[in-house]
Length: 462
Image (cartoon, rainbow, N blue to C red; front, side, top):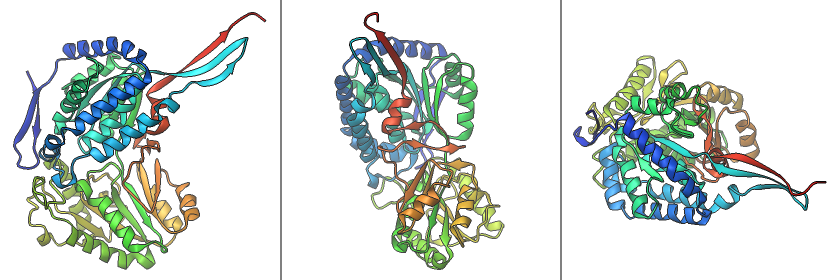
């Protein structure tokens, strides 16, 4: 029997291993969730909300185990305490708005007719979650899907193999009925076979563009609804009236936090020419003095290893190619002796970059950022849109009207002004172009996890 092996970026050891579930056994498990869904959906909304909240609360109680486990699995330093802040914020918001978001749209209630549109659950929702924020990205769909009356099947990335297992345990211990939320250990082939068989009623995937294409191919002809978030190359534009120190602090944190492994992390920066020289000096100082690369299990570490050696290799390749083509790195490698040529990768700030370089076009997903000067809003806008991805864009100015005007022209899912790298659960998390399609969280997230059902009831003849 084949197995899934989790190689820890901390020391290269096998941290966890689980046998791959056979397709037939997995199909039987999914069938049980389908059977459980009808009774789950019949429960009052308030009961479903209470049980989902209890499951997340039970997960919080596991924090002493979860935090070091995350460090071992994907390298995030323990000093940041896991992902509970975001998990709780998103859970609470979606639970709070559920009644409003799922309420019927009443068209008519008269002596002769009742006409309304209700939101009904799809049935079985399949969540394929990534490794970079393994709890928060899963919660984005798991919580509203369960609240809306769906049952959920979770498959997690091998790099964070234990997350799905721990979530299923937390919800089970909190009293969620059997088979309402299950975790499966599947390989790519088994996953695609289940999708192609029409096993699910809705699929949410967060991951690579290649992974999204594979899921679309597998689902072809099944008419299964898909939500896909497939990456980003998020830009920041700092205008001449911006608060420079604030912009540097937020944007560099957005570029380097979690070793740059953030879906909406900042990967390229465009700076108004009058601020350019001061910005790059401050950015280099921020990285040189504010980050400590090292073992994520040590409290003083602020940037741990990348989740996998091959991810770090891609960032190194983009960086070295850029430097060979004329870019200049502002960070001296001697400042980061912990860079071992493997998963432990030093942060880097690149200048003299162009859009002919991969580091300014392809997703890096690591602790490197390229910075270019721009001479006008039109110049910045053309560069921000010169990209296959469209997840978020960060604008820095004291002029909200200017930001709104520029934001309207950016091909992106979210426009930030004077902030970056944040997911607001009240707003739809969405993207365009190769970032994917669909949207999670907010009221729209509930709409995507349900389908409309119309009732036209004639009470008596005219």
